[in-house]
Image (cartoon, rainbow, N blue to C red):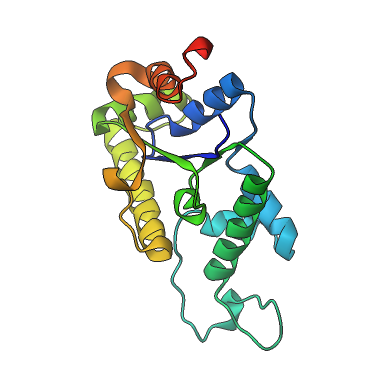
Length: 201
């Protein structure tokens, strides 16, 4: 595999887990939250600020200087835009070093020659998965559904705002997989077959 693989995912669908397992099978680097610290280092902004804006847009009063951090004294650029630019630069830099897997952050639109996956699942499957993953947390199905819908909404708005494209639209990806029926391991086998890497299944 000689291309960067990007993974866009609905919250709770297992996209991150798929990325970790796929990177292991292919023997290539995996990047998700690591992008935050890399980009934060690049423009000398605290990681907490990056996490605040990670994959969602925060709208503030444009005249409130509290929410601006200028690259120079001349230009006042909204923090969310600076963070997107910084992450985009990191994504391009990582891609220039060779094949890897990058989760989220509009990487499928930032890169021009990547293989783009979208992982989704029915709401009931995502609720079940998240409740199992966070078994210690005091959360019921309704609260988890609310949280899932909120994260998806933010991701969709972020993607639309920075790319002008529709998040989750099949035509924007090379391969879309429903993790509900076959789980993450089933999706992993499907991706490896799609890549012609059947020997790694």
